[in-house]
Every structure is written in C-alpha cells, then in structure tokens.
Image 1 (cartoon, rainbow, N blue to C red):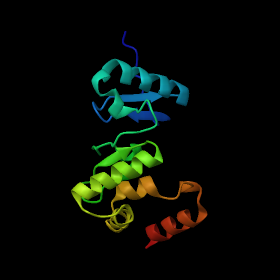
Image 2: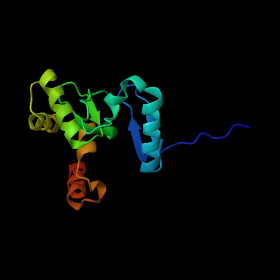
Image 3: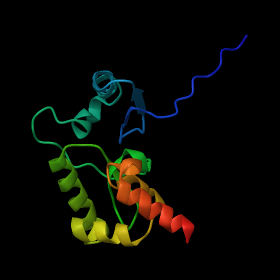
Length: 146
C-alpha cells in the first residue's frame, strides 16, 4: 500500500541556492542553517565563497529567476531577483546588476516596479501586516465593490 505524499501548504523556512537552484525547506531557522551549510560544504565546494563569505566580505550575487516569495529585491527591467541575504550584500549586488542591466538607481528601480502593476510584486511587497491591516483591507473591499 502506498503512503500518501506529504503536501507542504506553506513553507515556513525556505532557502534556494543561487548557484544550483537546490531548495531547502525546514520547520526551524536552526535546521535551515544546518541544511544550508551542509549543502554549501558538500555540493558547492569550489564555489562556496560565492554563496557564503567566511570572512566579513560577502561576494556580489547575480540575480536569478527565484520565486517571488523568496525575493528581497527584483530588477524592473529583466524581472530577475535576489534571494534573502545581508543588507550590505543586497545593496551592492543590486546596484552592480542595475549598472549592467538598466543604469537605474535602486530607488528608481523600485519606483518602476511599483508603477508596473505586477501582481506578484505587489503581493510580495505589500504592508507587512497584510490581511490584518485595516486600511489595506478596506481599500481591497472597496476595489472589489467597484
């Protein structure tokens, strides 16, 4: 008799390796850290320094086609994004990509994304309170009524 497949409805802690697209899903942050470190040491030995800096200098990361829910930043021109990382690494990587791709600044890129009315971008970047935000909920109900 076959066992039913386990279905994950909401991935609580998720990480995608930007080098090989390997995905890790765990229940806790500690498990995620251990699994990520294990993957980097085992599978990406030659390029481990590109994934995680062992000294405080973190490398530039090239944007990829990550799922919208795993992005911390998105390019308005090519729609590729960066996964979660330190703020300094994100800013440096984003600006390096924008210099090559579109020549925009980070704030100009963000304004273009807001004005592009991309549903995925809007859902991923709305107020952190989301459904619990009264103003957002009233605006949404009013928009549905029109």
